[in-house]
Length: 107
Image 1: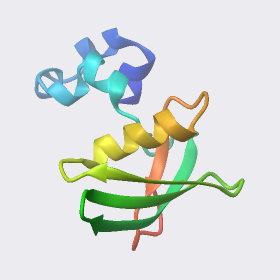
Image 2: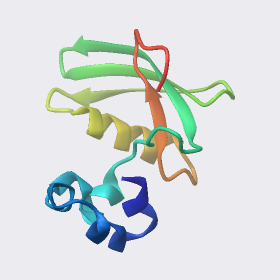
Image 3: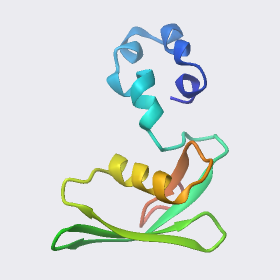
Image 4: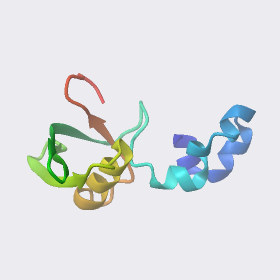
């Protein structure tokens, strides 16, 4: 994933099953907001995720600076949608970030 982020041609050196993986295509990688293990990226922590009438309510701590983001997303929302919303709404120049989910100790 990170290799394709840095150079879309890197995928041609991967094993054939990886080359065929749609999630690793340069277009898919371009919209994937999540960092891979070992990369230097901002950490965001999901503080709240609850069902509401219109979909889901979420709360996220962005980095260590005390910035928080809250909002509502529709029922059809995926984790990728949430990640893209966080990236578009709260992250200035970051290409990707770690998302720590409730109950986990690491991104």
